[in-house]
Length: 274
Image (cartoon, rainbow, N blue to C red):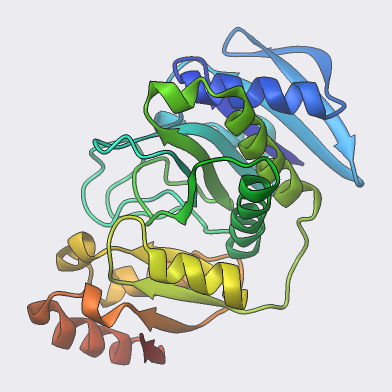
């Protein structure tokens, strides 16, 4: 079973969830979760449930246990930034340091690299097809929850103007659902992204143009918190096999470069510099 979730406190999440219900054959189950209706659908032999959370999605630490630890959890969510730049984005959740915004300290969710890649590619497709003036981007791994099942956020941002944009919400809904409908156990390998900004244009371009599958992405600002144990967790908590790391070399501080190379050697993970 695959679980789709949005928070009632999240304008974008609610609007994206409405588009899921409008465009796919979901029906009420007669059940409720946190006093909100639960919907279900069977699409492409996939059992999918859609739930509405009473709290913000980043705090949904106990969600999977209520639904028998699903194969995949997809959060439909807003994305916020000071720039307010219109953005359609995908990322895995988890914390490299303290749990300031939900989840557990130094604990990552399992990154579904293939599903994230499929969502990113589909966002790019609908950006073009629907003539949306939005950027499409991977975001780095950040915030909660820290779940023991494959988990991703598919987001609409970055300000209330975009959160209420029904056309963009439809694009996010379709990207999330296409990734879900086509999910399968993939023998493709994934990579660990290291360095660069919160939204990494280099990694995004590699994914869109070269079909590189990124699992966890560690941004420049988080590298001071990362050690070999954290790197090993990035590898182990990716659904697909991670066979090497890709370093955004210019996007890594000089003082962090020797440290990250030593830590990659410690866990025997090959790397490429770009």
